[in-house]
Length: 423
Image 1 (cartoon, helix red, strand yellow):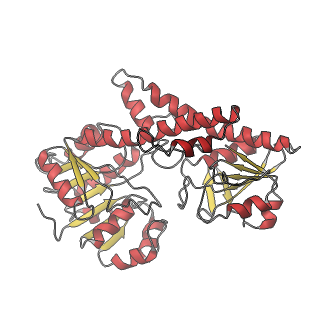
Image 2 (cartoon, helix red, strand yellow; image 1 turned 120 degrees about the horizontal axis):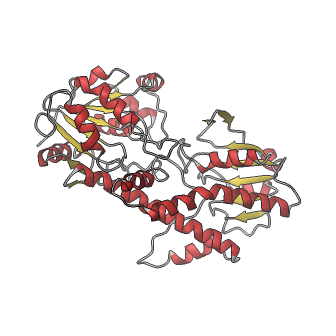
Image 3 (cartoon, one colour; image 1 turned 90 degrees about the vertical axis):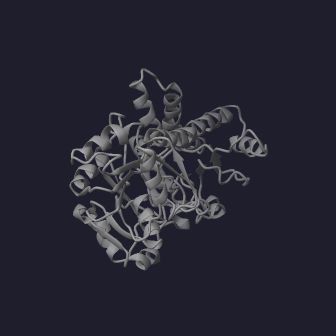
């Protein structure tokens, strides 16, 4: 099947939906982008981006074919609709699929015969068939007969210039072979390699395996970091040495915790679903516990480092470098930096942060703005903590002008500096 002059609808114009919308528009499709945020929609209509991975020029170049709106009725003429809404964890630790349900409910009146519907939001196996399918079939249209339904997990890695939407293989799993074929044909216009699987559940589970693999291995190397420090061994030197092995080893690095929209959350979706099958995902739970304790471990490092310099944690001025969850992004969801702020403030420290990508943070009822990074700002801080390894930072300059540095990312491991404490 070939898609030529079709209209593609994208629900959710965040880090997944917006690049996808731009890609389809660049391929020549007409794209309707729906988002609940009027602010986002207005920004896009003016050709302005709010994501580091999408430039203003890219948006401006496709505005003739890309139509952002808050109105779901604009989807009624679409040939395909892709759902790319957030799927966070509820405070109880259970999956929060309310955004999927809300998007499906608002879109449902405009579902029509022959339409393809694809869910991209990361979720537990069974969501597409057990929740989305019956909701859409309330229209009287039957999935796999009157309209096509599939799941295709997003594999966006923000700020990654090597692996992009185009050259990262895309997994698609449809309700029927025809559904899979329709979804595969759609994505082939923007992705080089589309890999079909037998069902939506297989596609959903594939995404969870990918991110659980990362979470578990990060937990392993975090545990190594704690053990190596107690044994007086540099974990960074160990990792560098182990990375010389050309087979059987994959490099992972420790840090102050894990953050972002996927790795801290997706494994817990799987652990929650596993209980339905009378299975306790012990490996996932252990890894999650290790990763979640890392901010507290970093606070203990800061406290010990200050103590060695004759200062208490209480009353000390702590400057965090980076609050985004990873380098070169403006996303601070689930960032370990947020936990560090709250833990340090609870201990009585005066905390501030600098991040060139995140000028202001709103979290748990508190607001904090990025300070200007100057020699004086570094010098007057009792401790500077490297949280996010943005490439724009000059680490030699930071170390030279700071009385004390706690490096949680290993970026100073080649420096011989008496004022640096490393994870």
